[in-house]
Image (cartoon, rainbow, N blue to C red; front, side):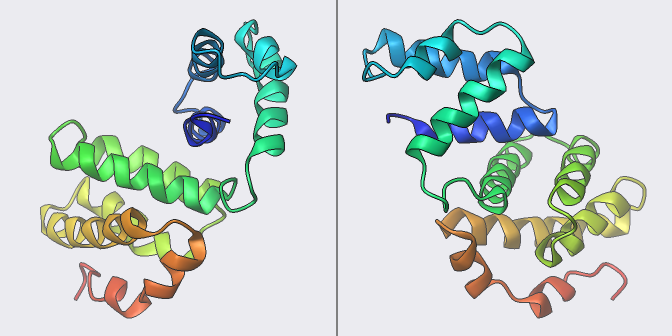
Length: 172
């Protein structure tokens, strides 16, 4: 299935409240327009969906049929989302304030993973304490760099060092 990672990313962002059902529908419409649906009824039904309740069952059916389990991992989706947020931050399209809500929501949604502790905490502090901006940026660079080169959560975790994250603690 073409562009499946795009659908997985759209589904993940939609579940977090940062995306829209329209993104998932647009994905299906693109598959139809490009004649890439392979006569998949769920793709056709997704393209014709109009509401959240209509979209999710078709998206989930498509993802579960075509994606392998490593592609469906929410940690991986979150990591790739952080990479895109990092790029936007470096380009000036995101601020510490705009990132705080997004990173906090990811942190909670993923049930507080250890690799996200320092980034979430430093981002929250950086919204009010100028001295914590540099440690936040250092941790953001670190985490985004690791996720940028990882294709699975296991690859990320093999390179991740809590000691490096702890060195970005703004209290130190």
